[in-house]
Image: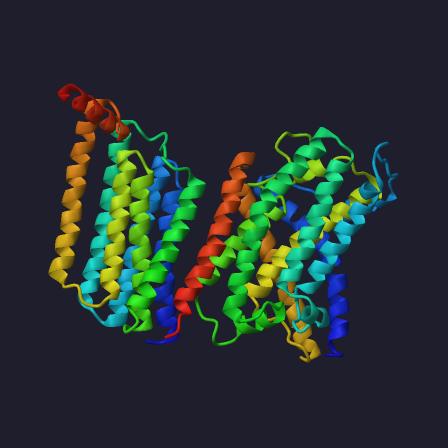
Length: 317
Length: 224
């Protein structure tokens, strides 16, 4: 397993380097679909740089929590993203931390974000936090149900094994997998504050959720939170790519060419998923906030159904 | 039968259950009708795949009936009825969507628990199909119970019937005569229900079936 460490290190850097680009691409595609020209795909990098250089303004009654939260959020999200095999499987960290750990890390990040939203005591932050928690009560179990379906199907909660299983001959077509995929997509849309649930491009609107919680942040704190949001989107798309389209991912100990191929294919998959996300966002209208629990409830239901149907198809023959 | 073949059959039968849930979730009239058409189309594909797997040509006819009658004619006719009745705005459910879905999940679990031990001697393939079919039937019942509107109850009834056809196609051996007669009886039931809808509306100015309860209460009051 010693050969895994360079891959792991490359991946840790890769997810951070690619994440703003992915967001830039989805924004660009969305703008083009709306017949706008749109900002350059590199704009998120520039935004981050600009924010880092700017002065931090903190509310008078903000506690230490307010200052610490962005870094915790960023760190947990980054670690979670580094655990998902992107272009190569067999990561040394992956053996220590499985899918459930990823869900737990994301849950920690969400917890901190909600606390930070409440800390300053503004009404917007409070609304954002309470809504985020309302969605989380459905999104998190839905994610876990999808994870259980995958784990039962592949016989492991570890992502490299699941990915390898999907490539193997025993995977086949299964309704449970399809249900898990749809559930995961719904959760991904909800968790990343994409359009039917939340509008990522809005400010000062009564319907916003994610933006409401980070309204008080500025300067490098905001930069770190934004970067965490970019990484989170990349994480979900990588997760979907890793489990449902694992073809071309390099296995541990493969040649350099396979690694290059895996990397190229991974970037291609991300671009495709980002493109599909933008198309979906353009085609659909934003929901009322009180419809969102229904939407996420569907994900939970699909995850549950997937797990149950798995017992039918995997019943002792 | 290769694993892929049975996987596809399983996928199609499972999709029937999924579309049944989507039917339960819809709260707009036209969306409900469209999803019913999808339900029938998935049924047609499922039966057609069974026909191909079992080398049973008569099942192709069943699939064709499902596609033509339930996939096209009945949805289009219901569409027109809904427009003429002027009820294309809302559906009021007796139980709201969330609990309905949960009950639905419970019903699926129930049908799995019931079917798997009962059909122990059958092949794995038939067992799965029967478990799915029973789920679709139970979800159809649930739909008829939770909806108040007469048209959505008709949809529930039709989706229930789709479940029966799914069961029959998996169990290798419903004769074609039975198949066709069931198909036609459904069509006739549909016609009768269609006429009744208009009669109900004429009499009560609504297709909300709670009006019937009220009417029953009145008549018993008069008799007393």
